[in-house]
Length: 172
Image 1 (cartoon, rainbow, N blue to C red):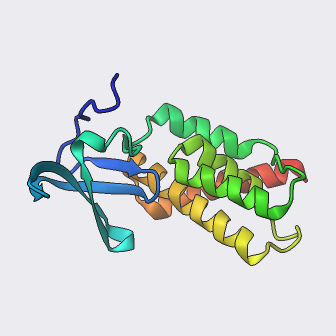
Image 2: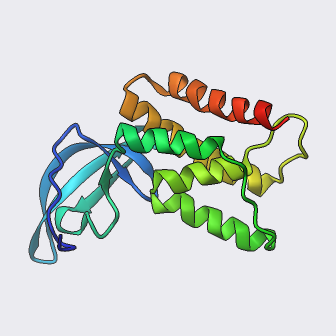
């Protein structure tokens, strides 16, 4: 598949944009930019009160993708159950890697960040930056699980939390 292949997205479709997570295509519009006519996906990220316009011919390059399949969701949940893999690198280096994983838009990578940064009540406190990364990853994961299941974010958050809690209980 060539990089400029047009993706078959339609208005009302939910999509994932790597840097912002789950959004909804509200329309496809033509706009003239520097004398050229451009076709754009208009994507709304309601939670962030943000609208993004992505040229349809650059959508693949930008990493825009459909929601994950239920299989990928269950793979992500399996990833959450795994043992945290924390490298012995300096925090700044690890933080950079976590950030790259979150912004990759890849659900399994995002689940790895949630798994690696999750803390139970009896574990040491998280630093402010750890907490920020954890919450960003958790939010991305939860929103996509919610969008795929159609069950809403509260239900998705409960589902993710149950997996994390059962993992913590098994480790104890």
